[in-house]
Length: 278
Image 1 (cartoon, rainbow, N blue to C red):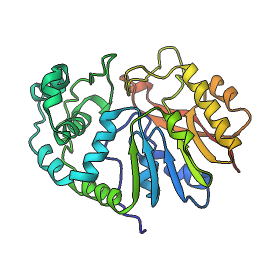
Image 2 (spheres, rainbow, N blue to C red):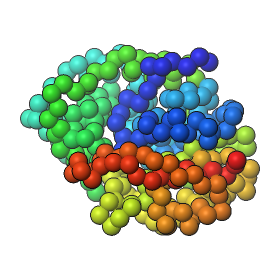
Image 3 (cartoon, one colour):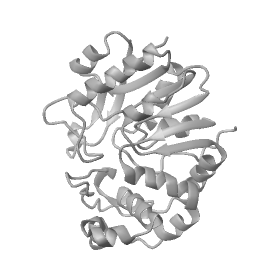
């Protein structure tokens, strides 16, 4: 299947891999028959590779709903997005939709998906973040002309989702990994181990991602290796992560990170790419 250059992330996602795609390319297997991504997030590598068969998952059900609606009802989604306004008052009213559970539950999947796309395009720094109740809580970004309705990209992603064999789930990543058959390739991009006590950002879904979770994931990687399944994993280059994956092929890469609210603290950071193959 020929790649469409318009197929690209529709959401700005913390830790997105768009900037690292060229770095990743020589580290990937030469052939990928079936692709698994249990922490799909913004999907930069998925959309770059555009595999014919892919299983994508994320613990955040709102995100998977966005992808499902793009696949099944993209024109209605575009129409809905055209209704949104780029003002602080309107932003906060839309952000508060999920504070009223009865109101929110009555919305259609298209309305819920449009809300997430709108908030992502107009919130501060494109930061998808929820509180402990699972409610979106990023502030208004005050951007002059955000691209709320990126119709060409939405249509291109929808066309890819419908021309390929794409399976979408929202469950615990370990459930996905249990069912991966031999011959598949798994890319793992979990919430990162924080590089300092004040750097933690695990607000993609309520509950966060602890070091115990990181260890559990590493054990899943050990299981994939035992089963002869190739995986590649991204994480921060902390001593903890380097120790966890000391038995594997580890490559240090440089990534630009821009989630810090203080501009002077944004910049290049070391990340690891872990592989169980050469």
